[in-house]
Length: 160
Image (cartoon, rainbow, N blue to C red; front, side, top):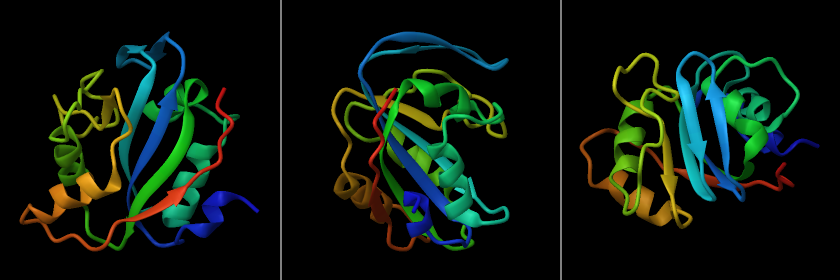
């Protein structure tokens, strides 16, 4: 049974927590080159298509797939460790990206990553240490955006 089957089939917003153990220079489609350093990465996305969170996160877990989203280019170089998610129809992707960017130690390694519809923004953030759901949730609670409970699904990914 795939780990993604434990996620709702409804739409929602998610953060993928990834760990990189090596260095690499990765061409991210036409966006540019990402310099990957050892550490933690958090990628924010939304899933409002067929199959919702279950289908989208399930796709991100797979390694052999056509390259469609910016994250697909990064995927072979990182191990997925957790998914933070909130099911529902609220469109929270940009709000969540803003909150991740404000966490201590956050850096946006490539402007525009995962944020083609938000020029100058990024939905990928690098951290020297693993960000915590507690800190992220506290940042969300401090905002004025409607936001439900964010849940965590730990993932068992062997990495590269």
